[in-house]
Image (tube, rainbow, N blue to C red):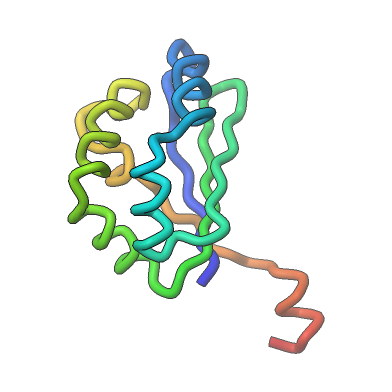
Length: 110
């Protein structure tokens, strides 16, 4: 399953967001991988638009597995202050986008 989602970082907090993601806690990285988050990337525009991409077996299940971890709760609490919608955990504010084209799928007839 390929998943793309968007969110929004406060423009004034972009430098802090970049700094924190340059050195994500090793425990957080391990838990993401263990929860099934593969080929996970984040892309950030200068205006704060955040786009994420992840490959997983089941996005809802992967998110639910992360929600059970202590490190995720701590990470989300710290990250919340950097997002436009700071009233909830950032991973609860993801807006999932619909995939409308994939080159490999079309080339293989899928």
